[in-house]
Image (tube, rainbow, N blue to C red; front, side):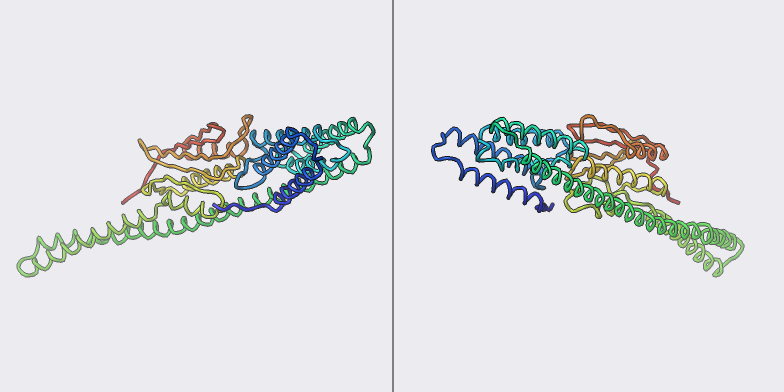
Length: 380
C-alpha cells in the first residue's frame, strides 16, 4: 500500500510550523514556564489534529465522527491560543483558523462550511476586539475573505477529487463489463462446440456402435473379429467424445475467484483486497454471474467512496446448495447512514437471482451478506 504526501497538507503543516516558531520567538523571556508549556501543548495538539485529518498515512476522514471530533479539537486549540496570547503582538494567529477552514469542505457541505467559517471569524475577532478594546473591522474583513477563499478553493478541490473517483469507478465498471463480455463470448463458443459434438458426432458414433454390434451378430470368422475390434474402437471414441464435451462445458463455467480477481485488479493501489473464495466455486449461468459480479463491484465502490476504507474483505462459500458472499471493509460510516440507490440496486439484482441481500453496521463498518441458490456446473 502506498501513502502519498498531499502538497496542500504539506503546505498547511509548514504554515503551522512557521506560526509556531514565530510565536515562540515572540514570547517574552519573562514568560512563566506554565504559560510556555500551555502554548506549546496547544500548538502541538492543533498540529497533530491537522496531520491526522489530512495525511494519508494517519488519515482519519474529516466526514467521519472521529474526523469531526478532531476538527472541533483543532478549533478549540486555536481559540485557546487566542485567549492565552495578547492580540496586540500575535494578531497573525487567525492564520490557524484559515488552515482549519481549508479542511471543512471535506467534512461538511459547501454551504455549511461557509456558514460555520463566518461564525468562527465573527467569534474570533469579537474576542480580539474585546482584548484590544477597539474594533477590528478591516482586519476582520480581510481575514474573513482569506477564510472564504480557503473554503472555496478546497471545495473545488473536493469536487475535482469526487469527479476523479467517479470516473475511476466508471472505468472500473467498463473494464469489469468488458471482461465479463469476453468470458461470456468464450463460454458461448465452448457451449456451442460442446453441443454440436454431443448432438452430431455423439449421435453418429452411437448409431455406428449399434450398427457394428448388429454386424457382429450376423458375421462369422475373421470378419466378426475385425468388426468386434471396430465396435470397441467406436465405443472408445464415443467415450472420448463425451469426456471432451464434459471438459468443454466445465471450462465454459465462470470461476468466481478468477472473475473477482480480474475485477479488483483495476482498483486503486492504496486499497488492499483480501479474498477468501474457494477456487471450486463456478457459475455456469451467465445472467447469475453478471448479477453477482455487479453486486461485488457496487459494494466495493461504496466502500471506497463512503467509508474511506483502505482494505476490503470478500469471502464466498457454498453450503446446502446456497452460495453465500460476505463483503466488509475497515472504514467507518456515519451512525445516521441510510440505504441509498446503490444498496437498493444490489437488492434488486439479488432478487433477480432468486437470492437475498442483507446489510448491517458493525463497529462503524458496513457488512453485506448475499445469499443465492448455487447451481454449480452443468455436465453432459
